[in-house]
Image 1 (cartoon, rainbow, N blue to C red):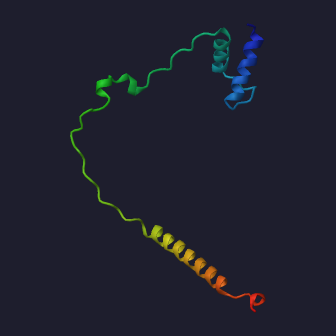
Image 2 (image 1 turned 120 degrees about the vertical axis):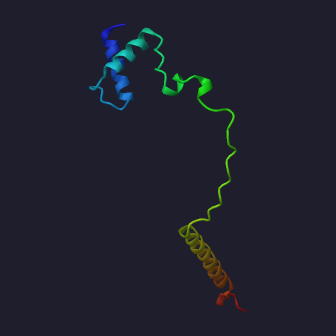
Image 3 (image 1 turned 135 degrees about the vertical axis):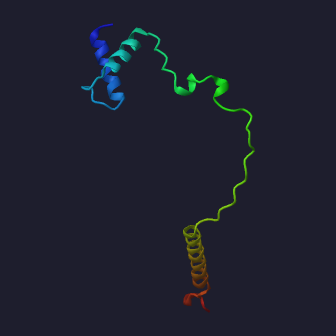
Length: 109
């Protein structure tokens, strides 16, 4: 493994991460070196949730069952829009029926 190989891979990593090949970060070099030497990457640092003991993360037995909240009707804007759509569909159906009922003069005997 040569320095040129590491640099080439670091530039590829920079491009993959949305940067120019000229903006190679130290982390790109480190990742390229690890990939080329087949080192096992370090595990990511533990999150705050992982630092808390598992039995303290959540209460498996809820203390309250909760209450049902009332059903909230849709806002007026929503019902108005639905009404406009229904009226538009009804008007279109009516127009189609009117056009369908007209007799074409060429079809008359």
